[in-house]
Image 1 (spheres, helix red, strand yellow):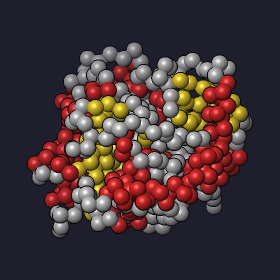
Image 2 (cartoon, one colour):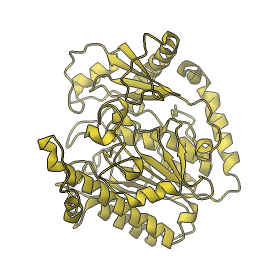
Image 3 (tube, one colour):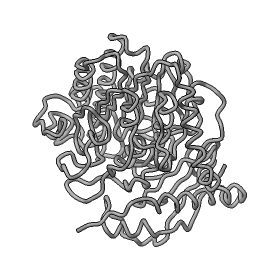
Image 4 (spheres, helix red, strand yellow):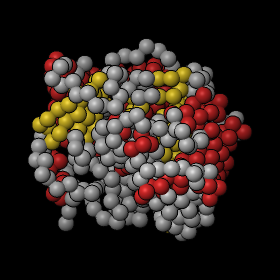
Length: 469
């Protein structure tokens, strides 16, 4: 089904999906849900994804007890839009999150009218908690919606990165109140908070949804000296990176240790038996070598910016040690969790993701909805993946001045710029995206172009216009 056909069928599909999710979930115990999100970890930054340097025994163990996704895609190639896509099940530009929410200024934020996983699960009786990086609004600006407005009972987070570094951060906000300096490394701090919240719940028979957003390994980097020392002999021909990479590697390993503590707590309290655990990265790494063998890095719609390491465990439902090569992504999590829990996906708006319940349970994959990315700052600016094929597109007005985040000029540009040049790649035979097949596969090209053009027009038309005073 191409995107045009999907748009015509969306209304009927939403009603059918709601009925299906209730039918599947009827009479079943509602599982707990834990989503752990890394910040800027690349496709090859876990040892179970081939890292020759980084050791991640806890996330490797998680993969060995569940499924490792080889073709899992973040919703965007940078922070804020990726999180918007995960929480809403909608392509980020629909929600008005076109790039990252900048430090200290600008009107862009996740609109309060958006509906998140936390809100939907809360309606099903879930306790809800967010810890770590938020980056969908400013936590020090009450005029913008806060985590509680999106369904989180409890939140300890930062508007953007841990500052001044991951060590002893000073910018955490707990339920609207600044905390001040916190001793320790950010990943360990937020896991401490998460465990404390789990232990302090009044009614532990209720299911929970915990959204754990690590700051690591996003800059500004800091990691325990013993982890940095493990990589002191790492040699990088790039002198500027030579000193930085051991700290970067240590950040990933510290995050793995923190994740391991949280997973151990679930084991010791008996919660693991009925908890869905998903770990993935919000986008690719800033270091191209960390995205091997994929092309490019964070902020690009080449696969190096959007295809990320991901593992999921759900005892009794996901076969231990399995691998999934079906293209799925963060935008699919809301409809998947709705089907599993019986929550009702919003019927008054476009939900772009699709449930992957059958896929993770090992059933034959159905023809997938297209995955779509729009990031106006880089060239190419648009990508669509459907099945084995990826189409990337460049926007007109190549001389446009791209702002680092977004401003009034960028807002006007991204609303009007049209796709003008296309490249086609077969992701099964060309994972590095080096062989442009546009001239050799005209039928595939035309079908993918129709899908991309229809999607892009629809998504950008829906996205709100932000205005600067």
